[in-house]
Length: 341
Image (cartoon, rainbow, N blue to C red; front, side, top):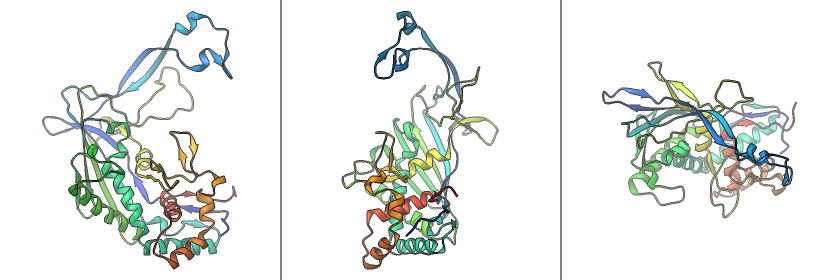
């Protein structure tokens, strides 16, 4: 299959902005505020004393000992608070069943057939189980998951509730206890239906309860700055507003989506971790593309072999890992144009 000039898929998983909060003695929701701090940190970066390949700068000793003034935003658990919450909504649409925009009718037919066969062979159940794992593990809490205990509650559009009492006792590759496994199986079935049924509306409300200590640091999203502004913090935290108008710290929906879609451990036979779904298998921890184009394992090469994958699915009920990866990218959505036109 020849990639077409215009090809676009709308994302199937849409996470809302998540807010952090705590509940006071009167059962009222209260915001978690931001501290703005000026620090006199030490200079320690490479460029202070070196250029290029360990070429020393002509810098005086006292210059390296001077303070590095920083103005940043931080966030901490308020005193007397032992539990904080993080909640958001997740909408699921079956948008991977066909392209939203496709400039080549033959490509549209082929990709639609691939998705149809994938659904028929039960492929969406594999993706759904992986998304469900990340939701129930609280992977989307990122650094905040490193606390004393984490309880995850999920309420779906069918008014079904799935609860994990302590997500810290579970892991991606580990064995789950019976109650947790049952929650995983039920949530998997729901997400499978949501990814393959475009005739209904599917959503979930997800909440994490985190047991914390007074003064523990909280890690919401950070805002990105193109350039520093005088008199404003160089590190600014994301915020949203509670119903009463109070400002509280928050996660961007994109950050939550990135965690939920960290499911790609098909990138290598003995892969030791799931990567966030990406066309080239970007591994930020090692700063490397695990699906480099020279390996013929990247999305664009694999999807160009759509005819081969369709023939494979027609002949067998076994779904190759490459097809799982292709469909996970289509679920993620994006522009997959073969050119700039």
